[in-house]
Image (cartoon, rainbow, N blue to C red; front, side, top):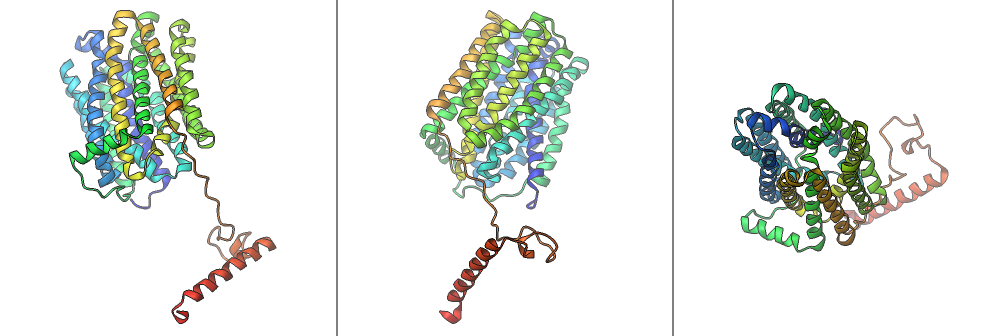
Length: 447
């Protein structure tokens, strides 16, 4: 759909983020239900995150160069179709190994989607609007927390852990249809032939750039801190503070509200003052909130306040970081870069899920919070020391001599109706005369 409006493109990508993020985030709140229904030890449940992350990393690396060469739209169609099927197949999970396989399949679909979706934002929106666009699109994650995660938690409580995945399969099927109908066919960013050796060489070349290497390392610590903290938070709240499923649902609802409020505002702020300032400040705030949680989480209202703050800071870091990534390389490498950083980030996410299980079982949630805070601080240091601040383009200014809109003459204060200040009319007349003179000099009769 070549003439799709930017708002419809935003809506489609928003729904993509909503659906794909919700099916990941629901794992944490329903982890106790999965353990109960399948008879799995608590320390092993984190492997569900690891299986998803490893598959996502591998497929993100494979599809990044492909999206640069065949176009983002095709890759988004394939990925959303794969995710729809993978989520539908969760109804067939009868034991822990089969659920691990299905989470890996969903991760593979997520890998196809991840790099292409972010790269499309960089291709479609100008530099001075990317922070804003990323903020709105990433608010789909917040909407998932507000609507999908609370409802999914309650569905799992009453209908079993498979029910939320089937619900997200329906929203992903709608996403697939909208990608087909709305996302425009943009010219491929690169016309170089595809090969495994060429793809590997491209990734190696990217990692040799100091800024890309630093961004990849920062992604590892971002995802490591998130998985270390969030995966076992609901289990800790249930066992230590007696939270019921309804309280967990309310927690994610409130976190989603924080995400909606903070994400777009942080994106616009980074468009004005720079990406790095917002990312670094948010990372320090995240570390403080994580360290404070085990000490201050003594009642429902304190837990809700801390989680609201933490989710607002997560959103404030995500939007400018995504925008910064799209500005590190040229458009013909953007898909590869997004896939590379996503894949490397998923290494951190998978590692965090595995470590979180062992740490939680051995030392409790306090150890998870400390490790997560250290990872958040490492993110801030990497961004501060090694990532460049991209020069933001000034928003284009309209030509005062250009017609503002098509209309009948003398029906309003527009240039084509003659309603301009005298000095502006004279300037436009001189410009028009110079253009006519230039055209006369280039005409065949004067050659």
